[in-house]
Image (cartoon, rainbow, N blue to C red):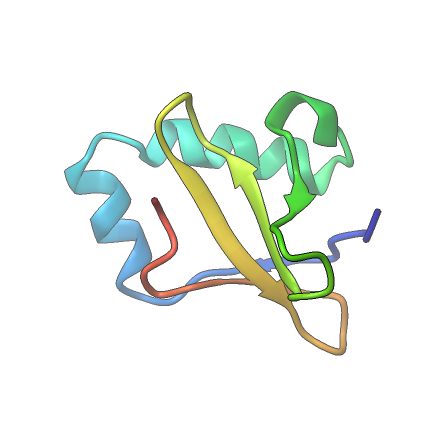
Length: 82
């Protein structure tokens, strides 16, 4: 399991989450990820393994998708919430 140093979001992500009333749930899940409590949010690598795309659960319907950069930061995609 990779360790996340920081989570970086593109500027269009937060308005997207706010419009769907997911912002507080996202922040809570983000704190779980940063505190290494990954079982709560089901942080895992997407299939196919080795793709480099990781996700965590915001709620039952939505997941956040992202990739790691070389510094250990996790970068949320611009169209990440699915």
